[in-house]
Length: 405
Ligand SMILES: [Zn+2]
Image (cartoon, rainbow, N blue to C red; front, side, top):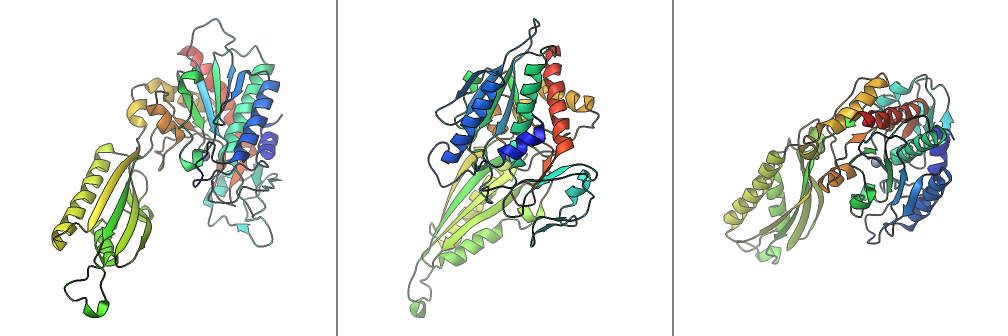
């Protein structure tokens, strides 16, 4: 089956994850999709196919070589982002895209001016939505590519390769995709998540991440008799917020610049709660940012002569580069495969985390590769047929490169 046929079929399965849910996987619809993938893998004669109690799908393409080489893992996630509806996705194939604005439905248009990445698809075939849902190429394009690779390898035993482990995870979009990953049972020496955009992207770097919960406790009294008594926690919260560098916010940063992001705030005169996420590619700088917050809280507490601010910091995930630098050959394999496909490698640090960053610290080095899609998490999401085909080719080169390790 062609890679785009797989994608168009997979996206019709609703697999939206739910951050409010405490079950694993977070939504039952993901389990149905996991069962389908397991069934397909069995039909392709992939071995040791299993769906774990947590809804993870695993399988093995056994080695067909006498050479000893490492076991490589290929990982993609089954869920789609809760940011946008993933129900009743109706993918549409546009052949030979002309580079103009795309009318998704009567009201919704993907304008090239707003989405300049569209330019890279001119002359190629693209898959778009009907404007009412996201597409789900993030990350079903990755799944389609891994499945297509599996099919090719099973049909062409003359293509020599070592052991290949396949893993499809739930709940990546809500940051829990690695939580129940069976690293030991997966039996890979290293792996790649196929979950990026550009086919020539090899990402070995993510943010270091922490969160801060701030509780401001004020003193509420009748405003008519408040003089020298009232402490309005809403005002104190603003004081605290404005002590942070304004320029270090998501809307003012790019590349390897870190930020403080206030993502929740709610309060009354008596009590205000705020939460922040802190991000930086440089682990030392993240520590500095945390210290900055602590000293700001102390400053304000001193100013009021009491503990008005209670600050709790918690580390979330770490930049995988720290660990991947210990095994440089892993990224080099991917870079060789990308070059063999005729591309220059782009190594841009991810401004986020990936399941790979967690898996890397769980002992499975795991950089991220592209999928041939763009504009994820919304109705303007798009996948490109030729880029997905190229990605299958890159994976094919990759598993062959592993033979030389
Ligand atoms: Zn993704």
